[in-house]
Length: 258
Image (cartoon, rainbow, N blue to C red):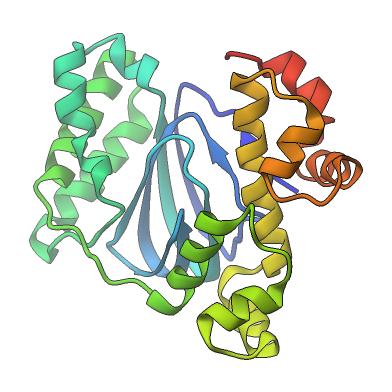
């Protein structure tokens, strides 16, 4: 099950096919997702969007995300802060990255050809300076666009509740009671929208928070497991390894204070 993905310092990827991320994941890079054709469903943190041709999704570092849906033609541009910092000053970067305060942007038709041209230039750029300049131009254009705040509140409300109360949730019935629906209906709607079960999502959130404790604290495994809502340190270890591929102790050894 994918979780954290280490990405190149910059890349452009264009794919035309029916493609779904197998699981939620996050990474240390910024990501621009542009849908040129088709339609998709996109989940970012606690928002669930229906994306159409011409739309952009903007994903800041360390944000959970996942996509699924029908056949599509999409382009992804990724880059790290350090990569862009080789060309621009901190004050300029702050201005360029302001567009990532938005998540979903649906640019007007009048801008589509210009934006597609910038994406093509980025794919063709072979020098860092050219890539950085074209990327900055694209980011400034997106900053001028009005964000689209339309998302599926039904799914988002479930996600918000889990994100806030993950350490206190003891059963799916507890979530169903808060959402005022049956457990069966809740699980079905969530799986159809997210592509994973509610238990898998809950465990992903718990493990991501456990990673933060392992990286930045000296708390022992039992305390971390309890803080993240696991009922035993053994179960915590099993779930953690299933999701990340590492035992909690090995993860701490390789990532402490990084």
